[in-house]
Length: 427
Image 1: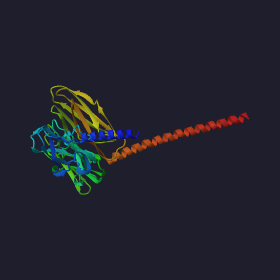
Image 2: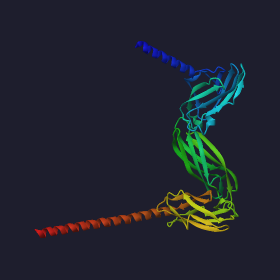
Image 3: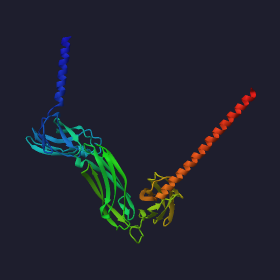
Image 4: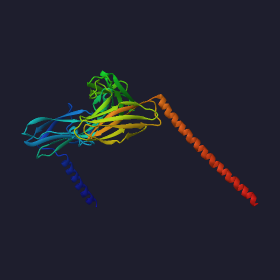
């Protein structure tokens, strides 16, 4: 029995040694002299080397230099490197993998090849393996794997403006507001405080600001409907619009873009605060703002079709979560070539705070959709009146309920008295 166990152990050891030799087989044609990443030389060990964690930051570029020598003639040599475990590897393979073109080497030749990777900004801050492989057509493939520790970026670069958008696009009429939506993310290793987002057009001296108390590590936050109104007397032309994010007391980041201010077609004075092109053949004329009264507000939307054929238009509204709206005669309609049609947007509300309320009107013509920023102004008197009306209605409802309760109690007592009288008559 002991002999049998000994034989089994010996066979197992032989198999394990065979697997080990197979796993760490060395290419007989190519020898790696050194591997350097961003100038730092790494240990040459086939297989996995987890004794040292090489630290890199999100977004950091990795320049990999590999010096190889030919022990004998080698054909179609190729070197590649990659980082596995990235969620968006299929879409961003150019960041986390690279390969050389194939090349031939004569015996005793020495060459240096370069590979370039980049730590993706959306990679997790964690530990990964960087794999480097060297192979020719006929020899064994040598693999060198290094443990890399991915950290967040330094505090001064921690907040990144991931995305932004303007409504209506980057073209706006003088006298009209333009809305900005900004998305930011914290790519650092620490939670950040006192986030302030500013959208401004310095040349026109207009701006809007939004704030956030804290932005956690890895958190994405959207700042929506930052609104700046282009002055009615702004001259047509291109203007720089800036998005500035300030955080953690002393740090900031910014991006800039260009918006184009134009005049309403047909107006004699640039900056007439109505009118919006949907396309070259369509002109939409609508007041940019109206007062909200007790009966609501009615926006006349006039659409002129300057095209050569009839067009189907569809109207929509977004951002009215403080009231109700409707279109008269309808939200979908046809305007013949050369004709003009007016549709009314009715807005009503029972209770709303005083101030200017912004919303968006969507005008769709075919596949093209254009958004127009509009607003209603609610005075203190109207806001108070709406509240008063609501209270009056509530009081009336309360009185009705009390009357019903009183009637129920009265009928109950009357029924009880009647039952008492019948009981006395029986005895």
